[in-house]
Length: 249
Image 1 (cartoon, one colour):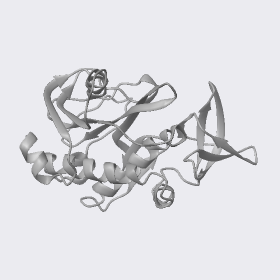
Image 2 (cartoon, one colour):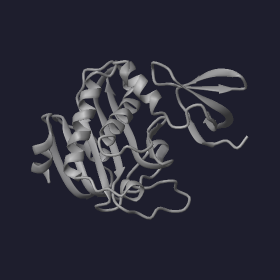
Image 3 (cartoon, helix red, strand yellow):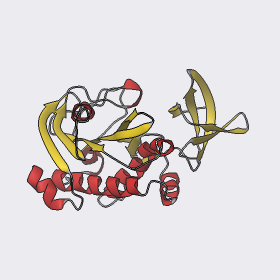
């Protein structure tokens, strides 16, 4: 599998393949303890796949792409907070080569197809002496048919659009696109692309902010990828929070 991925890649990167791990992000953290080069970690299954806010990401064997990038990057600490959203645009750009249907990015880190989650992004970083040592970009993508719990609003590409995508080629495309976009993280085209493909834009939703729930309308994002929502008639900028669900109000 490694040589097949490399045959499609345009970027030079180390690749490590595992049959099963707890989390590809955790493997990257272990590698990052020592001296390392930019590395792609891919697993056929994860027993402890994680999403944002400590949630689980279901990672059944051979049913999806479970990958993480461990990267040394020349980036200001201020720009680190933009990575997750930029990678969201990277994933959609690649999937748009295969899928013409409704693909959207749910702020801040999920990709939705036909109103169901098909992909999640988890970025982590390590800062030492006020300098960025590394970033880890984890991407989980549901490819094959799966049955999810009833309380999980998720699906797969096959179940939604009935297509099979070459996994190795798709991994390479994702890596190339992510690396290209991260190198140009302050390109304003990322902002406009995210806004164009923003899930629930203009709709009333329930928001969780600092453990309190609010009803608001999604206005968009600002140039720092912070969420802008109208709550009680005022536009509020939100740097940390979560869109819970569509409000029926």
